[in-house]
Amino acid sequence: MKQIVVFTGAGISAESGLATFRDSGGLWEKYKIDDVATPKAFIKNPDLVLKFYNIRRKQLSTIKPNVAHISLNRLSAKYKLSIVTQNIDDLHERSGSKNVLHLHGKLTEARSTKTNKVYPINYKELNIGDLCENGFQLRPNVVWFGEEVPNMNKAIKKVSHAHIMIIIGTSLNVYPAASLLNYANKAKRIILIEPKGVKMNDIEVIKEKATQAVPLLVDELLMN
Image (cartoon, rainbow, N blue to C red; front, top):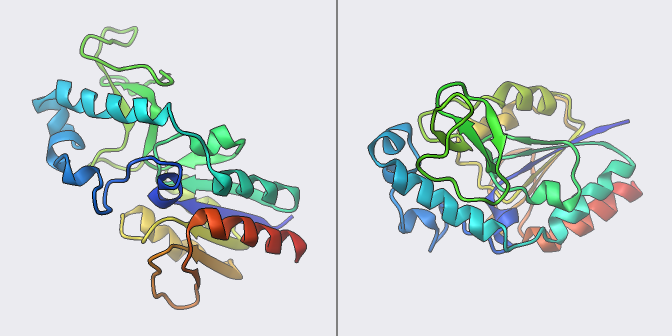
């Protein structure tokens, strides 16, 4: 069975209504990275950081996976499907995806600041005084700027075995995640779905929204 790896970014979730970071009107225009998305920020003002992620978690609870998320799962009928995502939402899982690797963590999880043990919190708020069983403060289980990406090696392994790689909703500007493309050596096709487009050699670029392009691409891949 051929292997397909789908690598997704903020664009696919934006079409469900989830606020992005880098686009015009995105979260970085309202919040400074240094204030809410670094280890130093959490030490300096943990209440602000927790509030920022509580707002995002609440918004996530109000939106649903879109047709792009859902359509990808049909590929499992013919291919071994793996999804690697930069997104910290759970929309892939809620769409029915079974094999999802989160590079930057998940909004619906908390992590002990001491032991790094992960705890599911779903869509609940996380506040000062919420402790792990060892008495240490919980933080969002997300990878902040300046932190290592713990699942990077797992992602590299998946990409290195891909026969087809599909990239959706990312301009490939966020590193080290964007470097995954360098490991797709076995891939006979690399397809990028991104409305703004990115000029790169040996990549098929579809300049359309994910909700428009993904269902059609899935149909094509299932027929061939």
